[in-house]
Image (cartoon, rainbow, N blue to C red; front, side, top):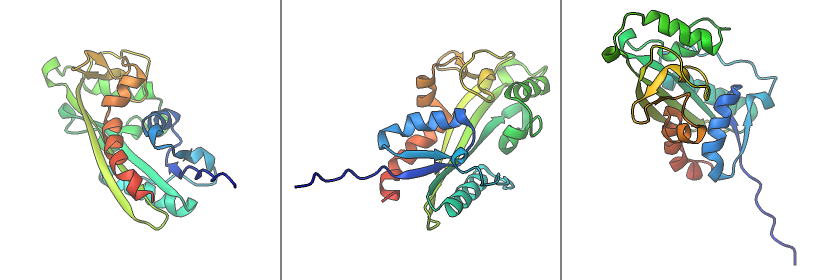
Length: 206
């Protein structure tokens, strides 16, 4: 009698070429035993233009496009840093804040420069992440995660990416870049969104 073959893990495309983001999502989604692919596995797919006016619009557009082009379930997120003293900027333009080809260091340095003179008590900010999952048939659901903190005066820490070195998390007394990855993966905006996504994924993927 033949042993029953174990079902192959469900393939899900994470709509990113950012290895830092992919590592975070892989660590958090690991318990679901998915086979995660990224856009690096589909080099023929062009960049999706993020021309929405909200995080949700951009995440939905990316996920729908990648699901259609790959014929697989696709997860996309749009996330950014919203700073109180800058009226919510850089927001949806976080990754392009200092120009399309700017490095992480150039982005957070530009932010620090714009906040010159803003005192400690007025440097509040939050990371926001909206995540969309779309089936090959076009069905979509979205979730949102937030992480509140404040902007430091100087960068600190070597973990993470993006604005992590200048985002201070009061509960831990450290910047996001000073936190160990396993801690960040519990409290970040992306972690909060992924926890919500985990609740709907098993049924959504059937």
